[in-house]
Image (cartoon, rainbow, N blue to C red):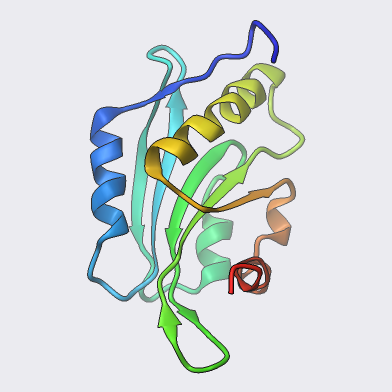
Length: 143
């Protein structure tokens, strides 16, 4: 690793929010959007969304995915009829980001995944590829 790579800690209130999000009782799709506070060198909450009446493609095209971390609770209908609600960690760092920002996000990704105990981790470079079909395909590898 480069000596200039900044790995940010995760804000304590965000850790608690992610813990509660993991055990939420609601059955709609929802997302926690996180960003890096460069001055504090912390991963912090940016936005929360309940995605009950908005379709997946619209929701993700609405988000500014240039440099972001998303934890997405997705209502997943299995082929055998079962329903589960996996927490998906989606990391986006498209090509146009400044190198310093890319390094901060890339360097902090593993710390966030480890802290939040996330197992379904997906990285996307081209935000146009982020579709519900893409997510379902990725989740299919876990079953």
